[in-house]
Length: 343
Image (cartoon, rainbow, N blue to C red):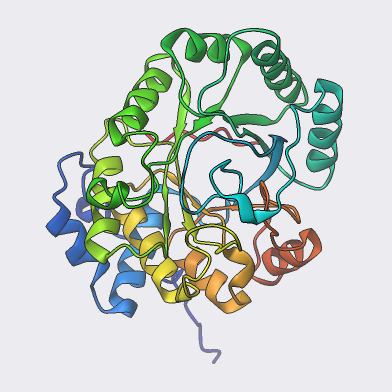
């Protein structure tokens, strides 16, 4: 007689359909902070269940990021080496890259396995004219390669958002950075309302929203929860939510901030996943300081996107080969192009 061994259920056990929480847009800061502060194993387990109820856990998107115009930004963001206010960073100013050069970089990123190509320009707000027209050409070119296209250009008018939508832009990145109460400690040249207005212009134009924040700038847990509350109470939720750890750059006001505890990133990824179940939770800046094990814990907690390539806008990122090896070792096969859709 041969014993029959039943196949093991996937771990964590998916939630029954009757127990999958409804997607909400009415979170309170206290509710989100209570989730964030759960015992870590309980938090990760709950986030993993929500993640599997709404997403394919094997779908981890790779996005490449390129600075298409670097430095001399008039904003005074305390964390950013591109600010013209921070003279000690030594970051050289570079003009807007030529369209053909950007598209060559995009093609190389696609060949290396990236599905999304993100382009950042250090502007307070783009001016209509040749440079904005060039960005539109970049967007059209990236979409012509069969990739998602994302840009971050600062604040946008409704007209500019409409033109980007016509060019085929998939997503616009405009981070809130932190909660509204702590925001003034980090930035004085642009208000929280300015950022929210740009997000509304992007949404009204039919472009996907990519919006998240940074941990490790001196904010409290309540500030982190407050940022997630603002995002989670948008209807629909942002399609993409980057979770960044501060990279303390010499010459910026935050140069002496201590490194972020990796478990703080795990908690933020898990909390974002629970309150925004279908969003791409992007494990973003600061990932280079994480061990393989910490990154895997973030994936288990619901992170399902990484920046892929050795450089972000101005700071180092994980090596492409190391990322490919990590994904292979945990059994992740990155699928073909999948356009993000939060709800």
